[in-house]
Image (cartoon, rainbow, N blue to C red; front, side, top):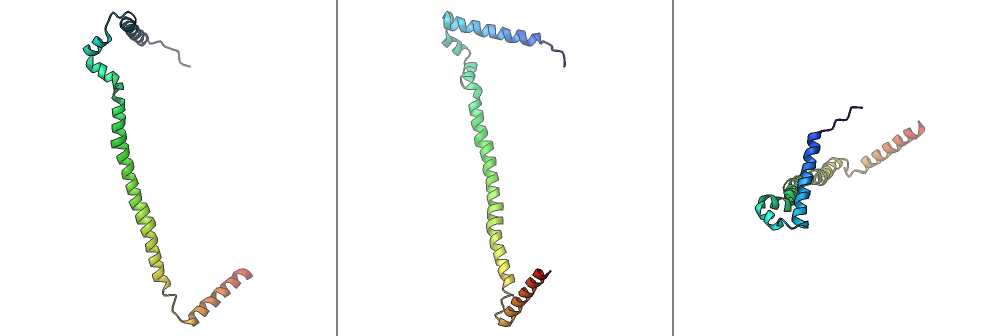
Amino acid sequence: HHPVHLHWDVILTSLTAVAIGGGLAWLMYAKHAISAEAMAQRFAPLHRFLVRRYRLDELYAWYVETIQQRIIAGACALFERWVIIDFAVNGTARLTKTAGHVIRYCQTGKIQTYVLVFFAGVVALLCMVVK
């Protein structure tokens, strides 16, 4: 284990910030010695920044709308085009067309060819069963 070191500068800075914030809150809301509206007007940019929650909502909305949606929409469009349309749909059509061109040479219309292929299949099956 490493020895524990206290960082007094951090501790004192934090306690000072708490004391100042607590003191101002007590003066503003308990004693009414300082007007909250006057403080808001005096420090208007800081007040707007804090009221808007550090503008994190706007930042998050910008991130989702511009970064996430564009990237996801772009990726989905590419996936749809290359995988679904080009490969699955058009690939299946090309495979069927090519298979049809190949298989049509097997269909000669001559009964003798069909009987020969049938008996060759029977002989092949018998050879597999006998072994």
